[in-house]
Length: 335
Image 1 (cartoon, rainbow, N blue to C red):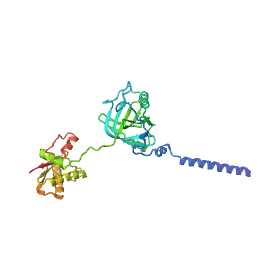
Image 2: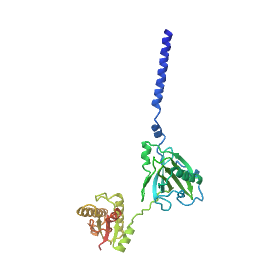
Image 3: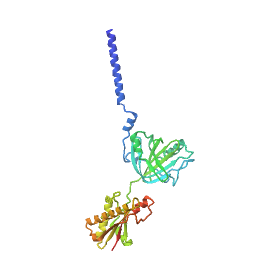
Image 4: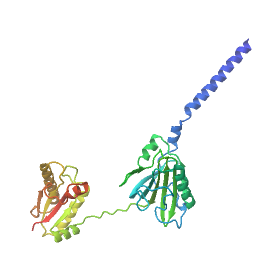
């Protein structure tokens, strides 16, 4: 009897240990979503691709390097693309996370009544495989919050419509290759209703804005009797922004180098808001410019300031671009 009780106690202890061990393992094992989170850190930059190892493809034609498969039509097609963006940022998913590329982006979209996903995938993926492009990743984009949030950046709004890399169009396939000393990344996605090809030509951003100098102001004053400036102020205020201050510094250089030049500083606005408020704001902004110049040492006798509000537009106030033209400061010679 005593032996039986002893065996029973041992069995209970062993079963309890086994149960506790299994419970501990269950607690320590992360869920599928947690595992995905852990294995998908954000990765920034194109260092996920070793471009020295990417194939340099020859005789593949011109950008975007691909035409529509027979029987499918490119939506809103222009020069082989549905949409073109001269400079964009793209989050590329490679299975571990995202890495960023920048450059010109073309989107080719298919969604006609005859769209067939299997035919699209075999045609497009087969084409890039045969071309010799390097397949970086093929698979789904996980539907966890961190990945979904990052993927929101892959939404591109063009002239015709918006296109985005989407979780509901899987699988996602990422390719990379070089051609004529340029680097390319391509993402292909599809579902039963539509398919897209995103083709990015990597390119560093090139600044094209040039400083508006005192010499250019003087040339305009000599030619037209006035110079038109876009001086940036805080919204609905007469406080100069840093870039506005930089232009006022050029006005100071202009007046310092041309002692016989006297100018009227004239403020203008668009027609947003009441006429009286616009008049007041433009007057205050012109005064800010004048006071800044006198504080730097320009004789007040060489300056005038006045605000005209929206009374003298240079363009119709019908678009944001035209309204921006009307929000200006003019330097006018008065002697």
